[in-house]
Image (cartoon, rainbow, N blue to C red; front, side):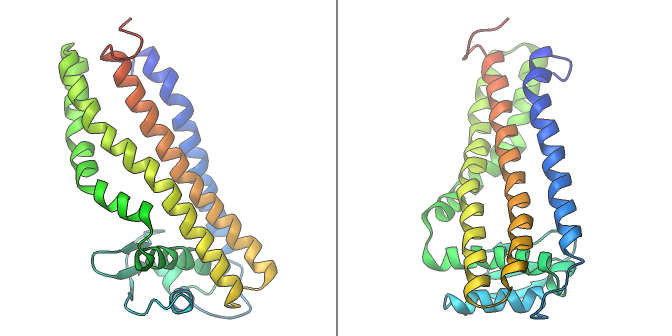
Length: 229
């Protein structure tokens, strides 16, 4: 598959874009992680304040391991922040923490795209694990039927990535609005937080583009789009 000219043609741009966005978000985070804020709040404190501003008071905030491993767990009502974010007092730390708090606010508000994403998770998980076995097996054995089944399963992964985009963008918008209205960051600091969150958002765009192009490739090779060459 990796030696298929069509695969390389479709996926090379997505791979390059993914590398660029990964470098972009890490670079932006590292840059603004060195810039302290006037408020002196930690990421955990900022997240708590953002949630309180939206009357969300039933979410716990915990430290977790890893670099930029921050996430909100709606099933347990827990917001987990990486060490640099949880205890950090920088623009980057507060921006990322506020973004995750934005997800908690979405959950409390019953934000439809977030609920849809949660509903897709089980099928997307199955598709992510099983589809590649069928897709690659079908490509090696020349069995279009296997590729078709794999493509159907992988479509759940594509749907998940697409639905993730509005969820992440909306969380950042909620975060930026909250850190402004609550006085967590002053105007100059908000510019840096916006840059960090914009870079992070582009990683989700890259993931969606990669998933769509991967599905397109297998649909073509299965003869469902344009036939086999």
